[in-house]
Length: 410
Image (cartoon, rainbow, N blue to C red):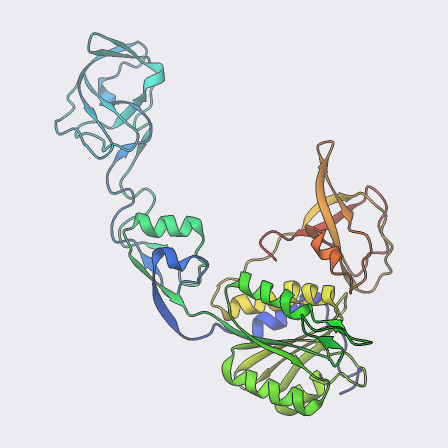
């Protein structure tokens, strides 16, 4: 497999290939509503009744018949009762009458309009309504939000706080959700030491597994930490085959470049299938994507920042699709001014780490110091990626650049 036969993919092409290749996993379970936060719906939720269930008032005021109101003059209406939320007025509103009504209270029979209390005057049991009212104003009709039998939430929707409230408003007790995605992950490299062990000469502590644990926990996956695998093809092969038996997806870090101790692509080609392994980006050019049995493999680079870039820009959306999310949302890029000059040669898409802040009422971004792919501090101090496209030839102070906020991403 030569470089000529496997040219580097653009970021857009790699994303398209990833999403086209993977499909949602099978399997689902029923959970109580509160336990379903962050999960993906496996089936549509159908409204069992109208929402709201009754015509009701959207404001505090007076429920009236519109045909009781004069068009160009004040109208005096006799107040015949009060309607509270949860305690409806039981009578009929006749012509020339009004019912004091609270927000959310059922609209009394005969009434079709609510006049807000702020514009009225009350004198000895008579409410005085100014001209200029509109028929049906300040009311919410039964089924206005959702009609009985309508799809309230579609399968493939991720359940957030608003969805929890919507489900509860329907009286639904349990929801049918996709099972959690199972993701196995491990690091490769003879130089990696475990925490709590003194470092030998040439060793470094393995940070990538902790970064991935955090990223996968935010995703809501069931994670299987398989530790550190030494730089030996037979050890790598055995671990990949074991992981493929228990996981829907496998994430490795390190061993995907072209060094003498980089074996991920070679072993993947032998025991599975390689879809691609080079991207036209910085950092994170080497990234293997393939399959072993029924498990998808994402072979990420070894440098800590490149791990986070490769995961967030490519692996994450594929994992979301595997989890059942449909559609996977496009991540917005926002244009802001650059507070500093940035050197760049045309050719590759680059993901720099930056901090977006408002300065004198204008949003601007500042890169977070040393942008080396091994400087994990640059991620910790940042709140966004500064995304420089392939044809960018550098940035001057004040130039507009595109940023991708970390919020909702990591």
